[in-house]
Image (cartoon, rainbow, N blue to C red; front, side):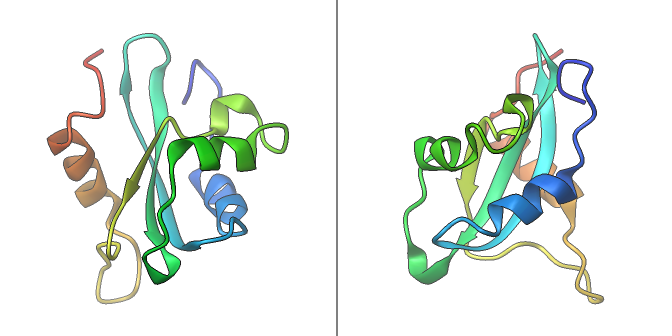
Length: 105
């Protein structure tokens, strides 16, 4: 939930997969003082292409609701997966916490 609005991570992930330079993406929520939670994008870039938060913001602005746009982008070499191929989002939350991306609520 971002500011009381429900955000479906899979919807944002599907949209971001259409962004040039994105190979894989996973969205998680992190705590935020003002909005309760904000989205963070963990991105595996194609061919190590650099992707900045401003590029992602430009790609999303006007196409999806502003509260769904990721507030942070973390570039990773690979997403942590289970043996059955699901993204282990709890590990991404731990990584976001280690990077000190969230604010305590």
